[in-house]
Length: 288
Image (cartoon, rainbow, N blue to C red; front, side):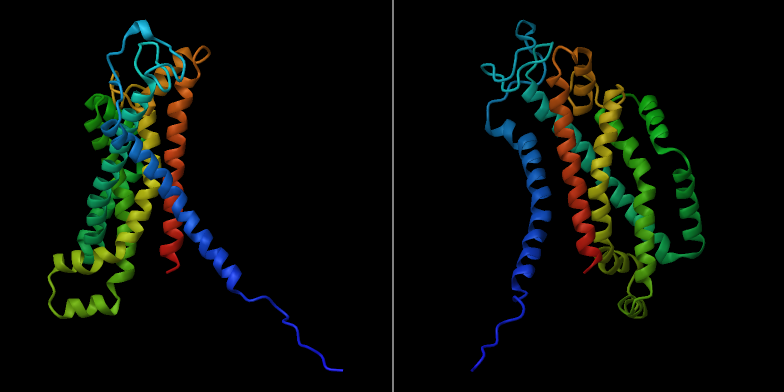
């Protein structure tokens, strides 16, 4: 009697497909969340009618959500909560992006120059950065913010200054690994100038690590900015930010808890999205 050979294993196409789908999801979810947050904060006020975030009518104070003309109601000063949430998010996101861009440019350049030149230049730059790292950055940030006064620009400068050492260390470590690579040695022997070596050959190769770190740092910066604003040392009222909205809402927490819930939820979703994106990029670029 003839026998028919049956397949002993399923093809590996399906697991591969599932893994590919999961890779798209782990990148798509945080990108979608960030697109939603950025779109709401920066585009919504331009394409839809949104009340001003300040100068509300006290006769319309503490209106509940879905009141006519007020999607999320109003605060005790009669200001529209939805409008303040969008404009506050804009302020917090601007601080986060500006701090990380400044830190990446300054710290990345310092670290690359330090590692590439080596010798006394490397020793001096790294010892100065070690001194900055040795101090508790959050305490110094509070002191700087207090001395400069509360404003968006001062908050950016204070946070960017203390973000430089971390970017510099990552840039230096990556440059040290690349400095002895054949393409770097060949460029050096061909007489390529130092600045061309740094920006043409080094920068594209260390950028993925710096960008990944900046994505993770975005969440940290936004939380610190929220803490500074909560303490009255960040963006000063009546200009909204998620931090000072939480601070103002706690005064009436038992009566109107949603004044704290909405900015806290926005802060949580934004920080989570940046952290997920940073972890995803780190996993992909480290394994390439």
